[in-house]
Length: 258
Image (cartoon, rainbow, N blue to C red; front, side, top):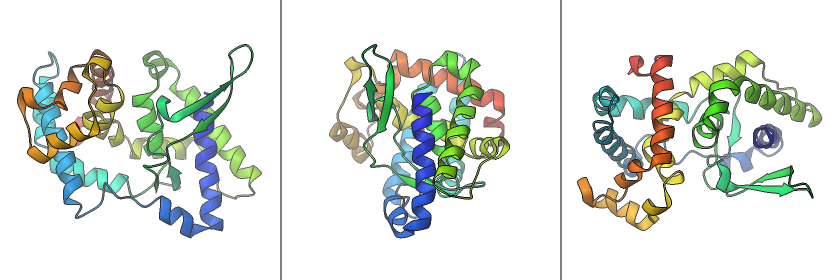
């Protein structure tokens, strides 16, 4: 809950800053990846989806996703561009990379967490708060919490988001329904992070690679055993998170809309 509190406060402060210094938010929150005519990013997105679809063919019980994903790359890209540049009710500065390695924890003498700082603000974008929240759910939230306590997490977020806005003298607020609207609007994020971002941040130590090797995969259009990136899909932790996420998306009807 402490992480969600920190994220809520970060988002709320950005609403205030955008009112006071809009040029600052415009500078640091400009979308650079999911935009029209970014051919390099589109290639990265398309190739990672192709590799992910090929991997799904090898996962028992998930073969049906492979065909849907492989046939929906353009649709997924178009929807991602819309979501990553928009909102339902309110825009905030999304951290863009809010997982445990980008969070500093301060502990007291009893080793209890007393404060949290978000660091590494290199992937910010000014759009729906549902982007950060959906990505955080996939990358960081434990499976038991996803299954049983997400409403509690969202209530915590809402409370601290609105209370921070109030303390800053901002009129904006989010209702529980509006927050749910943002989460549903950005549900595609739970899928778009799987082929690339989640594969990297959740990779097993024995499958870890570096950014140069990953870039080589895309530049050379490598496939098969020579592709170090697709080896990340073989990790136990990644596969557990990916299969849970895919099942949830299936149950919500996400794939029916492709």
